[in-house]
Every structure is written in C-alpha cells, then in structure tokens.
Amino acid sequence: MPSCAKRFSPSLFALCLALASAPAEAGNYAARIEYAELQTEGDTATIASQIEYRLSPVAKEALDKGVPLTWDVVMELREPGWLWDSVAYRSKQRYRLQFHALLNQYAVQTPQNHSEMFLTLSAALHFMASVRDQQPIPAAALQTGRYYQLAVRSQFNREALPIPLRPVAYLDHRWFLSSHWSLWPIQK
Image (cartoon, rainbow, N blue to C red; front, side, top):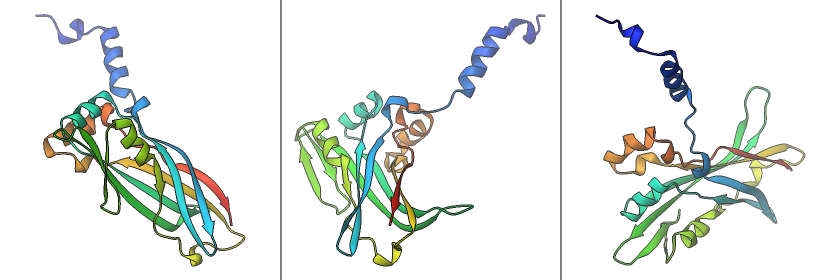
C-alpha cells in the first residue's frame, strides 16, 4: 500500500504553501483616499476628503442584482503621542449605494438619510467621492501650536450585506473594498 507521503510531491506542497500564505488584498478594487484637508472658516473647522471607489466585478454584479453596498467613512483628527495617538475628534459617515432595477437608476443614501438618484454607476461613485464632515470640529479640540494628523479611511461594511453573502465577503478578496488609513499632517 503506497504511503500518502510518496504521492504528495514537493512542488505541489510548495504551491499549496504559497497560496495559503498569500496576503488577502483587494488589489485594484479597494477604495483609495486621494486627499483630505482641514478647512477652517472663522473659529470652526471641518474635514473634507476625496475618495476613489473601485468596485470588483463581483461587487458590481451583486449591486446590479439589487444588493446594496455600504461604506463607513471614518475621519479622525489625531494628536501623535509617544506610545499611541490620541484622537481629538472622530466622525463616521455612512454611504449606501443601491441599484433600482425598475427605475434603472443608482441611489446613494447620504449620512443625512437623504437619497440621490443617478443614471450611471460612475456618476453615483463620483457623488460619493466628495466627503465633507457636516459637523464642525469644536474649537477646544484644536490648540494653537500643536501638531495634528488627519486620518481618513473608507471601510466597506460587510455586516450590511445580506446574511447569505457575508461569509463569502469575508473570505473572497474581491470583496475587500476598504481603504487603508491615510494620514495628512496639520500644524495648528
């Protein structure tokens, strides 16, 4: 009786090891933060950012079948520290993109629960790209002469997907549509 070790070739083992250790990244499909800035007007300040959303073919197919896609845009004003950064201000805004087949239009639900309709997917993604925090940053959070960092991330919300689709979205790299944290220095 042949042993299992004799049938298992070293090249097959190396291939399995390479596939198992490959990082799970979305590659070209992840959202990308293009820029963020602190906009001051008088005594108040707000955060504005520009995000590029790139959907994988699997995400586009789900969207075209009526599955809504949701992103949480997290904007933080951080003060760097020795061991960890302290967060002086944090805002989270949720954007929901859905295709309505009967209308043949895309709907974007904004953080203010207002819905905008678009004829094309690119127009809807372009609308979602410009994010401006609606809540002014309190003046007490920004002290003159201090160094701060703007941190922005667009996180794809897998928990907003229908329950049968969630396990696939956690395992398939084509569903990794979140951006990494992007940092910009600010001198106040």
